Length: 218
Ligand code: ADP
Ligand code: NI
Image (cartoon, rainbow, N blue to C red):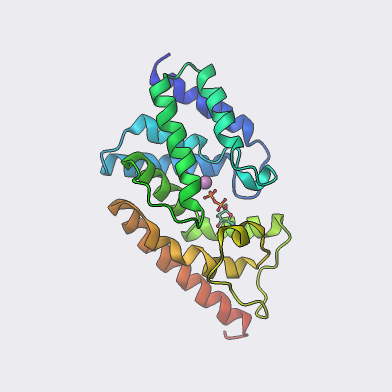
């Protein structure tokens, strides 16, 4: 099987896995991260196959949907990659990126050096959480978890630990202040930073307008 066929197989497995998911964590998220990953990989001279495979697989077995189990994703992915007969070296590179990505996403301090492919994935995933699509995903996620859109009586908590972040209930608007407005400063590639800046500005404009409308300012 050549690499293009391997990608097709991965794509089919991921599509099947995410069928009927509606928290903004779905097949189309994987698809967008793949597109962005390919774009940034080319600009940053990263390995395109590794980035594409990792992008498709990166949210499989997310801990939020498996009772907090942070290990399960790696196990499912390894089983799939072995079935598709991807070579051991590539499997390890892909697993490494996907596992690193959840470390990077978490608020744990981690000073491990990341490969360029891991950096590309980090940025592509985070870029999908900001800008117009990011706004839609935030409210979709909030609705799914029965979280309020906004509640001015609940202040954003700007210094959450990893555990608080995993367990705490907030509002969707607070999520912008607690996480999304900080993402532009956590980009790991130059290309990612540039795109993040413009999506960040779009999101800021949106929030200003939202809060004005909330207060009856026309
Ligand atoms: P990913 O795994 O794709 O990096 P997350 O798992 O952190 O993203 O979240 C998936 C989507 O749901 C993102 O767009 C994120 O901003 C949104 N989201 C995560 N937590 C919350 C929350 N507490 N309130 C609203 N939206 C959230
Ligand atoms: Ni993701």
